[in-house]
Image 1: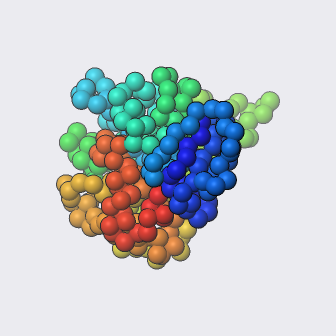
Image 2: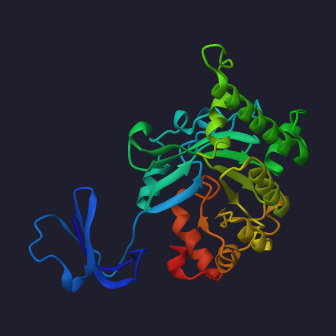
Image 3: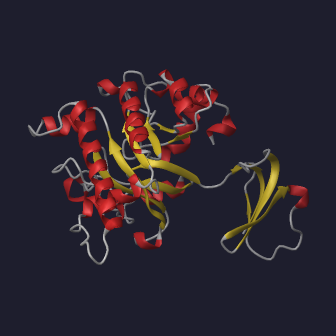
Length: 330
C-alpha cells in the first residue's frame, strides 16, 4: 500500500506537509516528501487528498471488550464486586473482540488499547495490551499482562459501603493493598528458599499474580482522581519499590511538582464529560498541558465506555483547547 498526498505526522521528526507512506507487507518501508515517492510502485495506491497520516492511536487505559455495548449485565464483565482483592483476574478471559466498539475504534484510528478490569476493587486484576483488529483475543495480544490495576478513593468505597463490607474508608483500601503486597513478598521468599528439605508454600493464585508486581517486573496502574489519593498511590509504590503509573489523575495538575520529583507518569482522562462525582471537582482541560509544562510524562485516555473509544482523537483535541500543542497531543 502506498499512501500519497497527505500531511505525515512521523512522531519522531518534523511533520511532512505533503508526503507519502509506503507499506510493504505489515511494515512501514519508507516515509518522505512527495517528491521522493517511489516511481514504480506496483501495489495499491491511496490518495489521502490533503488529509492527515499518522501512526495508529493507542488508548492506554480503557475497558474495551469488558463491558458489552448496550447489552447490560450479560456482558458486564469488568468488575468482580465480591472480593476487594482479585489480582488473579485476567482481562483476556473477559474481552469480547466481537463487540461492535472494536470496529468503531478501528474506524477512528485506534489500533491498540490497554484494557482490563474496572475500579471496584483496591486490587482489581491484570490489564492486557491488545490490537483492536481480530476475532479472538489470543491473536490480538501485544502483551498480557501489561499491568496490575489498583484503585484508590471513591469507587471501592462506594462498592463495599453498599455491601456493608470492608473497605469503606481510604485507610482500609490502602491497608488491603499493603497487606496483600506484603503477603506476596513473603510468598516469594518462601518459594525462593524451598529446596529438597523445605516444601514450597501451597499454591496461591492471588499471590502468584502479585509476584511480578513486588519483584518490579510488572507495573501497577493506580486509579486515582483526588490529589491525596494520587499521593497515597505513590507512597505505597515507594514503600514496595513498585513501577507506578497514575491513571486518570484528575487533580494531578495541582501536584505537578510532586509527580515530577517522584518521576511518576500519568494517564489523563476522560475529559469529555461532566463532574459527575466529588472526585471530579478539579477536572480541567488544562491538565495535560500543565503536566507537560511541568515535565511529567503523560498519555491521554478515554476510559471507554466512560467516553466511547472512537472519541480518543477528540480527547486529544480538547487537550489542545486546554493549552497543549497539537503534535504533543498526538
